[in-house]
Length: 75
Image (tube, rainbow, N blue to C red; front, side, top):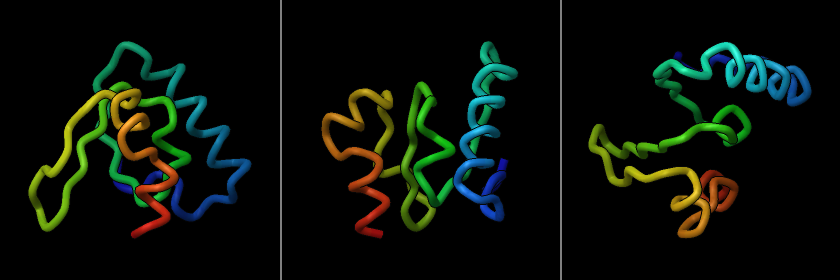
């Protein structure tokens, strides 16, 4: 999904993120996002810059090292 919630207000975006988490629980879903809210409940994060993967880790490891909010705020 490419920016599935980009045109939504934060409250609706959060509801959609919850729904995606429950409905796709045992599925592989690739989400492209430029805002952290939609990827709060993911298992793995792959960061791409200039078409190359520059980071691939669990969300927990990424949060310890960078934090989603910090990463998105510096972009």
